[in-house]
Length: 274
Image (tube, rainbow, N blue to C red; front, side, top):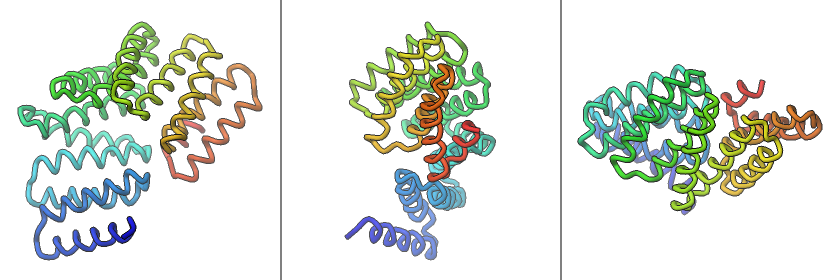
C-alpha cells in the first residue's frame, strides 16, 4: 500500500466520521492529514485540512484541539508570508493555553505559540517584543523539559540579538543552542545553528567566515531536503557576495533562491528577495 492510498483512505475515513456527527474523531483525522501535507511542504493542502480540523474542534469546544490547531494554522500562514493572519491564530492559541499551564498538553502548545509569536515579531521588526515572547517560550520549554523546543527557541534568540547588534547575547545563546542541537543530533537544528553563526559573522563584517558557515548550512539543508530554510541561506549568502562585490556569485545564489521560491510558492521569501 503506497502513501497515496493511505492518504485517500484517511480522507474518506475523516469525511465519513464527519457525516455521522463524530466531530472529535473527524477533527483528529483531519489534523493528521494536514500534518502529512505540512511535512511534505504542501502548505495549501495542509491549511485546508487543518482548518477543517479546527472547525470541528470549535464545534465541540475542544479547547486543547482549538489551541493546538490555531497554532498550526498560524504556522502555515507564516510560511505563506501572511504575517497578520499568523499573528491572529498564534494569539488565539496562546489566549487559550496561557490559563491552563498546569496541564502538560497546554504547556507544550503555549511554548510553541510564544516561540512563533516571537518569530513573527522578529520578522516584522519589533525586536524587543520578539524577545519578550521568546524568553517566555524558553521558560515554558525548560519547565516541560522539552530539549528540542528549548534549542529552537535559543536559536531564534540568536537571530533577534544579532539583529539588535547585541553580539555578546547572540553568541551566548548560539553556544547553548548549538550544544543542545548536537546532543539531540538534530540535523535541522545543527543547520540552523550554522546559518545563525554565519549571520553573526556577517553582522561583524567577517565576510569570509560568513560565507563558510552559510555554505555549510546550505549543504545540511540540501541533505535533509528543507527547501524553505535552504532558500533563506541561499539568499543570505547571495547578499554577502553583494557586499564583497562578487556579483557573479551573488547572482548565482540569489537566482537559486528565487527559482526555489517560485517553484515552491514560498511567498514570504519572495517578499524578502525583492
